[in-house]
Image (cartoon, rainbow, N blue to C red; front, top):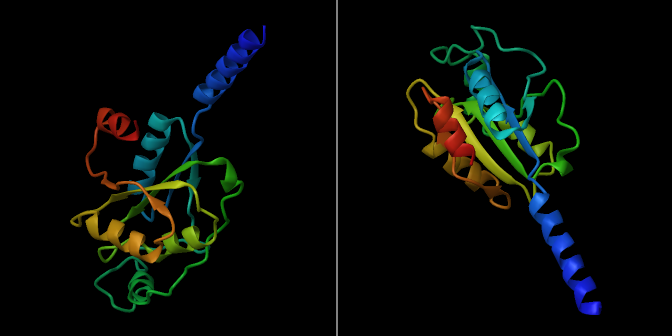
Length: 174
């Protein structure tokens, strides 16, 4: 009888563990809407929650003018310690086990507001997966910079999401 009860309990525990699914969040910063569109597609493919890393003050076209060394984005990116304020912080990060973090690539790395998000949340023990959009850069340096800046966090392989199909997104999130 004890053997049957033990087997039944083991089976229940096994079913409970296999039925438990990762809770996934797709968070993103998007100044122009390009990264937002990709983030929404990733969230749909992954069955994930969605959170926008929104700046306290929206970026204007003048703020984003990379040719102007005095534009807001240029000034922020020149200063590695710059941490632009977010409109609001994500809540209940404890429930997520996997977090996709999306951004446009600025100056070959993620925008400083992404650092604000990372430093404003306890992300230890979570798998962080970067994704990016870019007009000309690869994601390699952005991923390298994130791993070097936050070596105690667990980083998955990042992906550049320019012109990806829904099928490619589904394959990537699996």
